[in-house]
Amino acid sequence: MRAEILKMLLDHIGTYVSGESLMNACSISRQGVWKHIQALMEEGYPILTAKGSGYQLPHDPHILTQSRLEMILLSMPLIEKAYHFPSTPSTNAFLKEQSKRIESAIAVADEQTQGRGRLGKAWVSQDQGGLWFSILQRPSILPSQASMLTQVAAAAMVKTLLTLTTIEIKIKWPNDLMIGDRKLCGILTEMSAELHAIDYVVIGIGLNLYQQAFEPPLDKIATALCQHHSGTIDRIEIIKLFLENYQELYTCFVRDGNLKEIIDYLNQNAYLNGHEITIMHDTTKKAKASHVNVNGELVIQNEQGEQESLLYGEVSVRRVL
Ligand code: BTN
Image 1: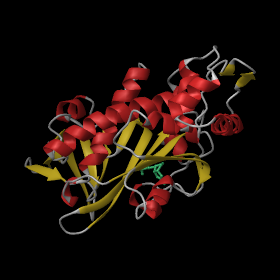
Image 2: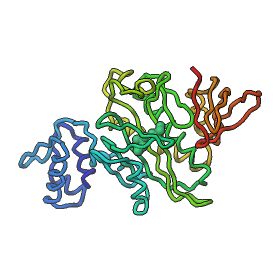
Image 3: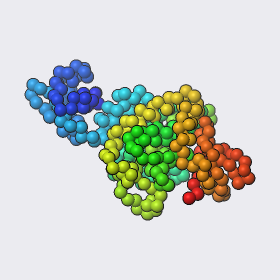
Image 4: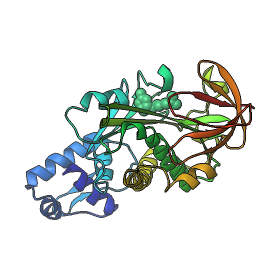
């Protein structure tokens, strides 16, 4: 309800929307409208009120709030619930805790105090440093197919950032986005499953946006969008476009059960393809990366010149610089 009211005000920036039209659109009482207007003001929306005229938002304050997230979901049937936190330990951890109660959701935090990365590493997620969010879903796919979702999310984020900026951004198999040789974004996909069925997946995305510099050791390996893009960086715009792209690519992926719809895109924007790489597993091996296949495996040529396919989760890969 509150999201609908916010949408009506944002659709009529600079003009008054009458109390009646809000009451009718939401089928609520005048008091009900007022309650939501007050709550929106508390979230930070500078709403003007005038007796006889109604309510007006003089400008879009571009703040990421609970209501704004819910408003984005109004046109996103894929995801049911939204959660916004000024601070939380980890949006992945939060959605995993909620997975018994809710079907699908997005959780976004301004700050994470215990952000988690892949392979048990921490993910630095300072207040307003970037976009830290997770999506909970229950796709009808096999557990063995779940790792491909990481690449669906990676493709959706690259598509988003290539629309909003002119920066060259590459996908480093299986879960990173890179600008040059530095990491811009990481994706952590976690799941709960039985042998043949997925209970849920949580896809967590950490996108560095506003950090002018990083503390060691990240100063050598990380980057943020603001270091490459002079225009404004609006988390709302990124989330909205990402969710639109993700919804489209996810639907194709679940229908096909593989990455055939986006495989060309993944390979055209791949960071590793054609490069010498180091594969870290039990031992360290050198190889040459060829391409990603429709099952989301990285196809490589080993030192003996034979082709091998690497599975997500089994290995960690580094490009030889
Ligand atoms: C990686 O590259 O290691 C993956 C990083 C994933 C970080 C995101 S931030 C939002 C979500 N919540 C977490 O605790 N982790 C993911």
